[in-house]
Structure formats: structure tokens, C-alpha cells
Length: 282
Length: 252
Image (cartoon, rainbow over all chains, first blue to last red; front, side):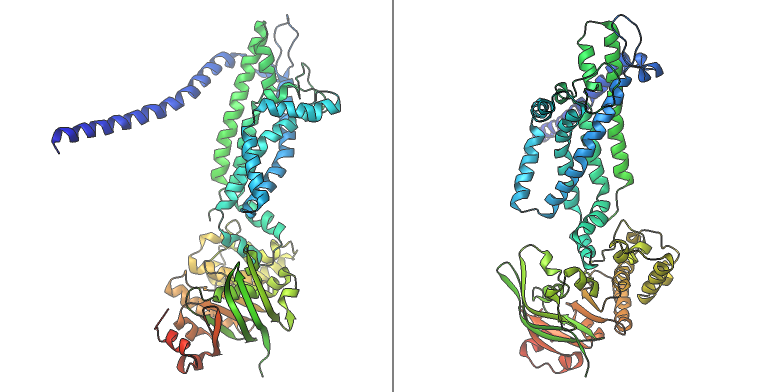
């Protein structure tokens, strides 16, 4: 083998390494651009007034997004109350009964559910809840979002619990603990960081969902805390106001986008922190 | 005449179609140390796990025959009562990693939701840790996590956790195979201490250990109980050829 061909191969190898590095950096660029763009457009719109007031009618200046902020929080809290217990317990079942027929079908459905377009979930919630109940409501929006949260919580709970050693469960059973105590006092507490990170990520995932809310929570120009009535939320506000012809409303949409972005960013960072802080050393 | 605490008659255990414990008949006397030895895969651990019904937790595991504690059939009792009467210590130390040393000792009470007065808790913790010769080493770090201890200390913590429930029988599944020699001898010394209050059944693949710690020895081979006798007799004058071959190291 001559020196030339070895040199050529060394050159090709370093070229390839540089290529992977450049492409890795390319993955960071979109987020940086989004951050830059939205901060630039939104930061001047955000002030105290913006956070505690509801939007003004067209033609009046000022106004804020308090209704959307409160609405988003309520819708997400209700969705979490529905999805978290169901998701965690289903995940426990999957981790405990790895080979059962039900586990197989549950896993399959959950994986497919994860790929169902959010607008379809919105339509289903519309036919299940909005139509029978006779009107748009925040609750139906929460149900739609809860359905979107489920797959993430179920799978992350299952994956977390599957990694725990069997010896842990045996220790608990050998002390005469019944199944539910083994789960709630030993397995879940030891796996809490993984389960919580799944919950947080699922919340981060649904925070910005617009499509399922379009024909469920619908939106509301006023501040409402009644979950049986239409309610505003951040993504709905952005959707409606950004497509409006009024500059004041565009400003509100930019500010709301920035808040939404910070929210998701904060959730992700917070998740990383709790995963580290609450990790139980085995 | 010594009284029998555990009694098996024609006891069988399987994993699916794999018959691993065959027609075992054994009488285990109270307050003795019983060693169960045999080559890998001879069914000794499976038999042990049948005594406190841990065997059935494995999918596909079945058992049949008679297994009694104090003349009461273990398989007619609720497994939770069985496991409260028959404690277990595992091959690898498995303290609860999310609990402190203190809480690990009273885990059987705490995690079962049994309320105890603070004074009782303190007494049980000190008593149990003293029994396993761990109290002096950990009394100033009771609030630290159990996983912070060394392997040998963790194993003694696990024994303390089992002792704290005041069972009648303690099962040990190769309790020292994951420990260094010094920790092993500390644990072995405990066996002599513990037999005044409990009946100890120890599965071991280490013949010297069986000879050192036990009063009686059971030899399992290919799922059968080949021989069961006083340890001294067993090691000096075995009746069965297979026992003879095993203790002279002709197979392992």
C-alpha cells in the first residue's frame, strides 16, 4: 500500500469528522434563529400591563394576554389531572406485564396514538364532547390535550420502571408488601425522576398545541375561568391575532409567542434539573 | 426431640415445563442453621424461594406438594402472611436506595403502613442493627442513604431489615457470594448469633461455608434432595455416592 493512498484516506477521515461537526452545529442554528427572531420582535411588547390585562377591542391601544395566560394554565392543569394518573398507572402495567397480550396491544395503541395528527384528536374531542355537551368548552380542550400527553407519559414511565432492578421489587415483596404498596412506596419513588421528566416533557409538548383547541376550547376574548365555557389559550391567541389585519394584535401575538417560547424552554430546563436532583442512586 | 418448623412432603417446583425441584421431603428443626448446597442449577435456590412463596412471582412458575410452617400449610396462607413469618436475604445486597439507613431497617413497617410510636421505632432500629453487628458502625449516620454503605454493610443492613420484622425463619440466598472475605466472615459469625431466635436456611454454593456455619446440611442434585443429615456426618461420612463426589470436588 503506498503512502499516497493512506494520506488520502486520512484526509477523507478528517473531512468526514468535520462534516459531522458542521451538521451537529446546523441542528443548533434553527433554535438560535427562532430565539433571536422572537425575542427581538416580542421583548418590547412584554411588560406588567401586558401580563395582567385582557386584549382591548380593535382601535384601542394597549391590552394584554392575561386571559390567554390564565386559560392556558387552567387547560393544561386539567389535562394533566386527567392524563398523569392514567398514564403512570398504564406505564406501571406495561412494565409489570411485559409479555401479556393486553400489554402488546396497549403498547401498540399508545405508539400509534403518538403519531395521530393533533387536529384529528381535536376532531374526535369535538364529536365526543363538544357536540354532545352542546358547546365549546375548555374541558373538551383539556381532554384532547390529555390524549396527546398519554403516550409520552405511558412510555417514559414504562421505560423508567423497566430499568429498575428486579432485586428491588423482590426486597419489597419479601417484606410482605402487597402489590400496590410495592408500586407506590418502592417502584414509583425510586423511578420518580424518570416519570416526572416524562410528565414535564408531555406538558412542554402540548403547551403549544393549537389544532386540538380550535374546535374544543375555541378561544375567548375575555378572561374566563369556567372550564365548561370557551376559554382563550396562548396558542389560540397567537393563531387568531397573528392572522388578523391589525398591528396592535400582531404585537400581542409576538409577545405571546415569546411567553410561550420561554415557557417551553423553562419546562425543558426544569426537567433536566429535577432529573438530576431527584435521581435515586441505585 | 427437637421441634420441626418447616416441613416439605413431595414438594415439586417448575418453570413452565422445566421441572427444577423434584419430590423433596425435608424436616427443618427450629433454631438451627440449615445449609442447602449443590451445584449450579440443582434447584436449591428455587426450593428456597418456594418456602416464602417468592417462586410464584416469576411468570410461568408453578409448584405442588406440601410445604408447612408449624403444621400450617404455607400454600393455604396468604403470601403476605407467609413472608411476614419467613424473612429473606438475597444474593446481592438490595437496600431501598431511596430510604435512609434508619428507614431501611423499619422498611417492613413503614412501607406496609404499620404505624409505630417513635420510641418503638428507635428501639427496633437499634435492636435490629445491634443484632447484625452494624449499630456501632452506622449509629451516627442513620439518616444517610442505605446505598452509601459498603457491600458487606449493606448486606448486614438487609439482614437487619429482615430481622426487624421478627420472623420465625430467615432464608438466605447465597448471602455472601457478592461480598469480600472479611465481610463474609462477619456475616457468617452472625448466623451463630441469629439462630438463638430464628431458624436459618442458607443456600450456598460454597461447601466450606456450609461446613463452617450449619448444623444440618441438605445436598441437592438435579432437582432432587440427595442427602440431608447432620453437617458433621455429611462431610465425614456421606451415604450417597453423589454427595461423596460433590464434597470431594469431583464435580461442581
